[in-house]
Image 1: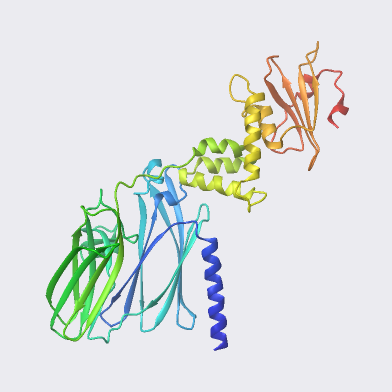
Image 2 (image 1 turned 180 degrees about the horizontal axis):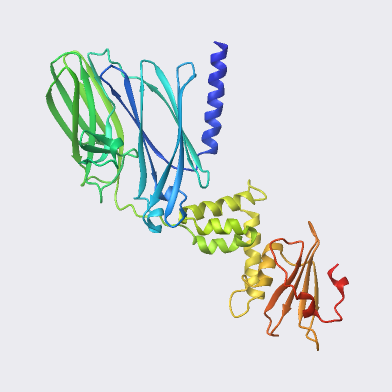
Length: 439
């Protein structure tokens, strides 16, 4: 017993902290239970990720990749089975990479015998490592009941399809595309499709009651039908016209009754109208200007391959990583960089923006120099400025104005691996240049 408690505590701790760490990737999950011919429970888990939740890279075409890890635990928390696999997602265009109406969807099936199980699924975006953990305790259906009912499968559409593309969602020659979010944009989907099964050990009539109620409990749709019950599996499927419903939350319920038994199942359904592609509060490429001088060339190459969602995550992670005081409401580092950015634009501009000049770049990275040595134009010397920094570690930069119009170019740097030197830098400073000025 003590061992069981310890295992339970360990799993709770793992799941608790996993949900804290991996709550950034948004994935819709749906779980539906059916009985198979042997009386075992078949658990069908559908998961869907909208494209705007994924990080895409441009490798000639826009691709994303997710890793899925499935673990099944028994009643004693012993791991019964596990499976790990990856899926590649391809977007037809850059616009599709941030379109919430484009998505990846897949279904997994697990067959179990009697008992209670815990299923843990971890989905990870392999590019930016954002993850989510879904865990659910599941009891099997009771095949010994005179009448038993599966869960209700909520579908986006039902259509004849014999291709391999949607084989996980096909029954015979018909595709039942599960809607794991239970969200319907009625500008695009005017019907709610549903599918369920019930299983009977005797042949009698069954009364079927189908209801759809709003958030106040008012019935907006109802249907009653007498069914000639067959022994074994009975398949039920239909649809409800939801085109004229007001946006909001609804409850979909099915009740089966006989003269000996009553059983009911229900699911929440959400109706929306006019859902558009998500907009963002800032232009990611403009925001990137603030941080581009603090990242390496490989990171900048990585940035150029990302879609908008990936760029947003890149920016957020950078600021979070460099936030000197995360408990405050503002990121002091970002505020400092923006202040430097604005100063550079005001003081170092040359027929354009100052932030992308050499002096602007060094100022944004390091702030104001702690010492400045300046030389005006002489007979054999170009005007130049020497900037020195001592805090943290010593850095030296030399800027030369080759044309005499204020456009100072960086020709020499010391202790800054991200900058390059002009091999002829010494010639620009004249024969009387004092090397001690660099100390």
